[in-house]
Length: 255
View 1 (cartoon, rainbow, N blue to C red):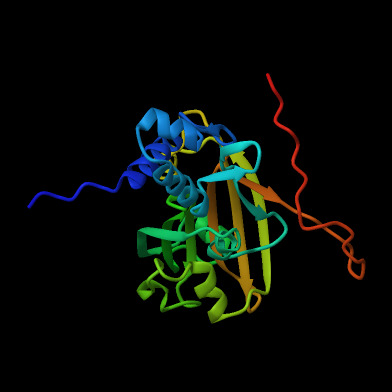
View 2: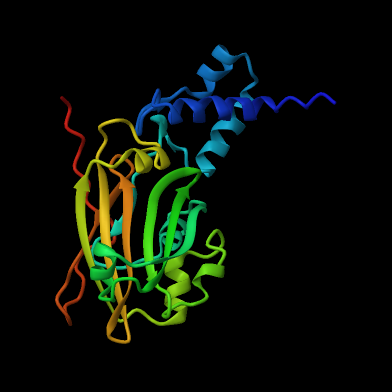
């Protein structure tokens, strides 16, 4: 049986999404207007309008009255001073979170992992390797180790539906955390999983969390430098916050 052709508006959407994915259209670049799509693609104004409207609803583009339609800035934001669930971050931005589980296994802690978790060499730990997506765009590779006797059910969890952060917090509330942020060039595997260009730097958050007075998880969270940024605001205890929740952004420097 011959497959049905996609509706014309969906073909337009796929065309624009493809141009964004391959870098032909960059964040804040202008997208063809309704009139331009009508003329260049030989479609009706209704079709062009629906394609742009759905792209806006799905977070791919921003439509600014009187100026036009522009590719959204897909740089996700996380708070540098807080430990947050990435699924919650993405949901708060009005976008869709999905997750691919690459590895979920039991192994023995050695070297760096044993030292980070303050356990004896050979102690059982669970290794989780996941890729988190925001609107189908990969924004984080989560490489996490969990002390097995802290979360014995970890190996059986479906982390496509609940993040490790949410699951582990439900087992025992977070008592203490340590975070280090580094800029680095990722290895080939991370670069491929995050769909990064050669030479593009990544932001890596190295995180340890404690429960019942001992470290129980150690994670390396890799993010594409062009699509992720860390923000933070601090006020001393008892001091009212004087700023809005909006983060000040510097204008792009024209070279």
